[in-house]
View 1 (cartoon, rainbow, N blue to C red):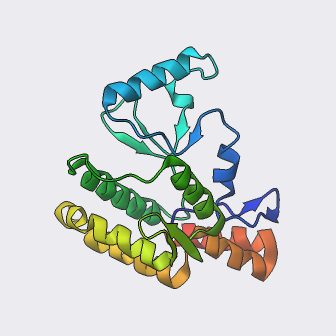
View 2: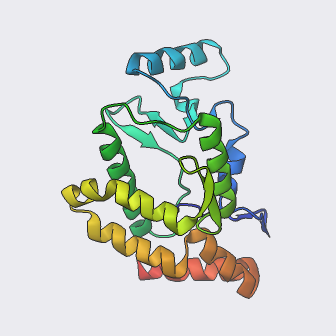
Amino acid sequence: MGANSPIWNGELTGFASWRTVHYRRWSATGIPPAFATVREYQQRVEDMIASRALLDPGHISWVARLSVNHPTIEVRAADTQMTAGESVALALLIRAIVDTASETDGSAVTAASEVLDLGLWQAAKSGVEGTYFDSESRTSVPVKAVIQRVLDYTGRALHRNGDEQVVANYLDSLATFGNGATRQRESWNQGGAKQVAADAAKLFAQA
């Protein structure tokens, strides 16, 4: 949903989120391992820092990690968005995902980290188009079905937080106009980099 970097060095990359691909050059990136306890997480981070391959915990660029300075979870998967409204809607949806997960009893089955990491790569490639592998059914499903599953999963938390309408409006816009990567590609096809910049400027002016 948050893919918004299809262009690099003045060319279309073929990816919806080229930033995600670039992040893979870092020493600790991608999907984090599954941790049974907070202490296990902390011990693993301490070991990684002790390796001297990382300067500090801030250099651990997992797509989700515990914040060092605040009592929260940092989710770092999305690119910078085209508008503030899209950023807010994504943040509200992510909060609902974390809220829902934190209310489980810890018995939920988690997909293997390598399967999730392939999903991350596929999301960087395809954005909100095509199909995605579903680890439960072991089949490929349309991206709309994946988004609906996320909405079903977070529905109670979104309602409780008063965020239902904002997220619903965002998903309606996503279905109609695509995400940032989709819109940038459309602008590019109409007039290259200049058109991408011009259309982005219009969005900023409207905001």
